[in-house]
Amino acid sequence: MGAADVDVHGHDPGEALVAVSGEIDLTVRDELQDTLSATIDEPGVTKVVVDLSRVSFMDSTGLHVLLTARERAQSAGVGFRVVGATGLVERVLAVTGVLELLTGELPDLDEPVAPWVPADDPSPPDLPRATTR
Picture (cartoon, rainbow, N blue to C red):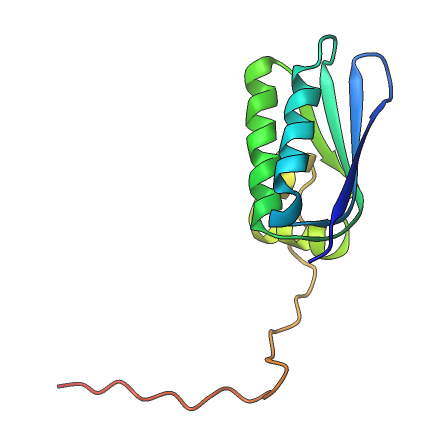
């Protein structure tokens, strides 16, 4: 997977914007985790906003980092919110049940989901049938 860029910007007084772009996976876990922790611990910061609008991919590593950061922020009395998740990243947040927790938005459960079809063979494999005794 590719790397992500993580930038921190002061937005409003007391608010820090952490803008992430690229792909969030194991290769950027430590950088993102360290940046979020340092931002949460920064004196005077009362709210951390994580912008994922330029993130094209996120795996379970990214979910773990975001959930851990949210917990850390909550313990420190700092607000924490994720914004800008779209496409696959939004879908990962919705399917894992953390979209509302991290963004404050309810998932669109009426949105149709295409069935999964393997790339090589669109027909399901023949599976052995269970036998009863």
